[in-house]
Amino acid sequence: MKKLMKNKLLFGLVCVFIVVAIAAAGCMIYMNSLDKAFDSSKPDTINITIESGSTTDDIGRLLEEKGIIESATAFKYFSKFKSYDSKYQAGNYALSPAMKLSEIADIIMSGKTNNMTVTIPEGYTIYQMADKLADEGLVDKEKFKSLLVNGKFDYDFLKGAQKGKNHLEGYLFPETYTIEYNADEKTIIETMLDQFGGIFNDEFKKQADKLGYSINDIIVIASVIERECQVDEERGKVASVIYNRLKEEMPLQMCSTVQYVLGKQKETLTNADTEISSPYNTYINAGLPPGPICCPGLASIKAALYPEDTDYLYFVVSDKLDGTQKFSSDYNQFLKDKDAYYKALEGQE
Image (cartoon, rainbow, N blue to C red):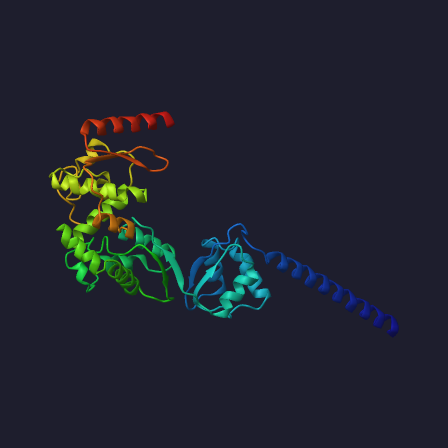
């Protein structure tokens, strides 16, 4: 009897062992199935910042929101199974949807934060920059925007800049920046202003004086060139049109200045648009607008400083696809070029 009971007990223990083994194997297989890339076709890294005190749930939600992992729940279970809970460290990390969960976990556990790289395109306004930097996790948007309006920055080239909320417009230089983790909003703005100061060197200052324009005037002109021109080879010609119209005391009539007032890009302005009351509206105001309409890149700044020598007074887009333009000194020719462009547009519809 005792032997029978012993055998039954042994059999029961073997069954339990088998069930546990099968369950463990199944769990292992399931966890291994979770350890995969969300999207191996997207190898580009995404910068994320994990705040101090973040839980595994917090981190999982952040990774899912940023499109780095497919499921925050899967990340949570994977972390618990691997005993990674409480091992994740705060910091800034460059992660990719092409990484497996185990790779992502290893990076976040390492605590080896990375400097962040961000590219600010030419032609962005300072408020578009605020949006991009916030999207990249580099700044608090409201803090950044507050500094744009109220921040105190001691740079000689800003002494002639416009006052008010657009004081820094045109002077945050568009560039690819490597920014240290935990750099605050003021440091980032100063980094961009420092870059502008290095670009706009003594040679550029002397050339501006030679042309008879202030630094702010040059950056205003460069900003219009940036928004009006898509082809580098034509920037000098667009600059010549601006200077020729200023010399002739003609309104600049640049669509980009009205678009700045509107706060959006429109392929075609209406008559009502061109009649908007604003000092930036160069359809109804002679001379230059009070400040830049974007932050221009080096090519546009050079074009503003070294315009081509032409007698052009007009230009219009000739090819929507490549952005090339037709230039003319005769108004009737301009009307013909304009009419040809709109007819071409109608043909594409």
